[in-house]
Length: 144
Image (cartoon, rainbow, N blue to C red; front, side, top):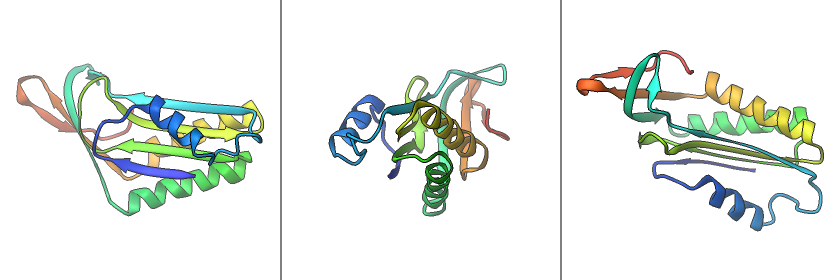
């Protein structure tokens, strides 16, 4: 399992490939890989969004993500999980999050990927500040 918070852009496909090449995913044991890549979009709540700053609580955020993954591993009988999440300034179109899971069977992989993302979006300690038209900014009250 690998959890990482980054303040720089990343290529989710390269990260996935690199992680699989480390042998961490028990290559001969898994029959399914499910993944989700979340990217920043240029709209929210009816407004154009030019950029975003994503803040987190260092230490607490990583522990929360680890707990989410351990829960998914236990509940869905996963073999491995990878979560990479951006913080700091983010531009539209840039990847924000990569969640990848490996399991013996596809149903468990799909279920675990959704479980991790749903918890991450609803409970993980991240805060979003959006940059709107005319220099306006707003904090996002709830995850979308």
